[in-house]
Length: 244
Image (cartoon, rainbow, N blue to C red; front, side, top):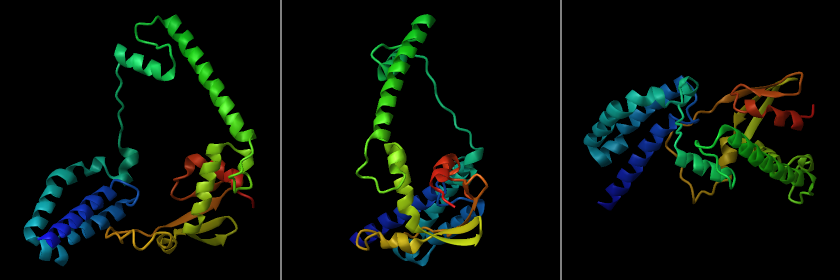
């Protein structure tokens, strides 16, 4: 009985994480989603699941998927994220305005405050925040960073140095092939990632993993551009690091 409980817990967890993967980056395109969906149904009706949990469990899972998951997938799929609208909520309650004012300064700005007084208070609070921010960032840039391992680390602030160090440490997880003077093919090295994980603390996942080949180009402005466009908003970091 304990063995079947463990199998039920494991299979249910796999099914849950499998469906969650469609809403995150492991499934990036429509073709990958369709392939993952077919493999998901095959897993539910696999010999392992049928032998331990019987056909009744598989039918319950498929019925639940068709009734409650499949109708809302167009609003949750990762590859449709650019076409999904997101709405924010706004409230003009006096109490909520007081709480937000207390977060920014000791003098709250409430909906009952006059317009002239509100502008004056907000400007004073903003000036104090900017002054603190400048002092903190100036200290980060001018101070000597003994923990720095990058050649450009002393020329940037603490947060920028952390981002650059993180990206630099991830370089060993990718394999590159230069196909021209300004083009590379990049692929994720799964073997390098697995070697950093202890075999006794992690088990191999049953979820499908897609091996993608990215194309990276460098333009005349020394800016790298990847076919995935994931680092599109961080191009300035690539410009600083690149040395032809």
